[in-house]
Amino acid sequence: MSIKIENLIHTYMPNTPFEKKALDDVSLEINDGEFVALIGHTGSGKSTLVQHINGLLKPTSGKIIVDNVDITSKEVKLSLVRRKVGLVFQYPEYQLFEETVEKDIAFGPKNLKLDEKEVETRVKRAMKMVGLDYETYRNKSPFELSGGQKRRVAIAGVVAMEPKVLILDEPTAGLDPRGREEILGQIIALHKEYKMTIILVSHSMEDVAKVAERIIVMHKGKNILDGKPNEVFKHVDILEEVGLAAPQITYLMLKLREAGMNVSEEVFTIEQAKREILKVLRGAKND
Image 1 (tube, rainbow, N blue to C red):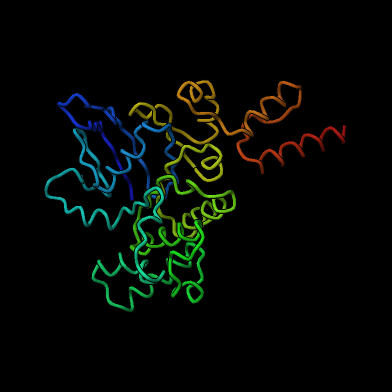
Image 2: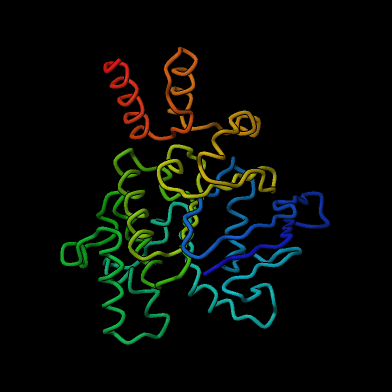
C-alpha cells in the first residue's frame, strides 16, 4: 500500500504569537512493503509527519494519498484509514488498561465489530508476531510484565487490527539494551513475514542502521536527505550540521581507513564491521 505526500505544510497555533511551522513543504513517496526509517532531532517534524499519515492531524495545506485515496478530503472516513495505517505511539505501554494481556490486544479488533472467533484468531496471531506465547501470557496482567514485554503487548494491540502500514514512533525509547534488541528483532520479523510497510521513527542511528532499507532525514520541518543507509550515512557532514551523526561504528571504520587499513566506508553495524575487519586481516595473512 503506497503513501504519497505532496507539498505538506503543517502550522501549529496559526495566527498567534506561538505560531510554528512544523512541516515545511514536504513531498515524498513510500512504496508498498518498504521499511523506512524517519530520523531527526526533537522538533524536526518527524512525529508530526507520521500523525498526518493516519489522519490524526490535518494539514494546513498539501495532500496525503494513502492507497490511492486522498485522506485530506472531507468525504473520507478516517476510521477506515486508521484500519489500514496503524500507529504505535512513543511509550505505548502507558496506554495499556485492560486486566489481561488478551483483553488488551483484543480491544481494537472488537471495535472493528469482528466476531469472537476472528478476534481470538487475531489476538493469537498478533501475539505470535511479537514473540509472546499465547498460553503463557494471555491471562497475565499487562502491568506485571517487563518494560520490553509491555511494549510488545502494545505493539500487538495495533498489529491485531491487521493494518497494511505500521508506524512506530521511537519503539525502543527507554528500554535497556536487551529490550531494544528484542523489539527491533520483532519489528524486522514482522516486516519479513507479513511484507507490511513499516515506518520507524527514531533518533538512534544505531537502530536504523540495523533495520531500515531506506532512511529519510528530517530537519526543521523539511526532508533533507532520502536514500539507502549507505547513501545517507556518507553525508556525515550534513548529519552533524543538523545535530545527528553517523553510527559510531562508521566513525571507527573511517579512523581505520585513515590509519591505512583498507576497509570499506559503507559499514554501519557491528556485524558488518566484524566481517569487514576479518576479511582485511585474512587478506593480509595470505599476503
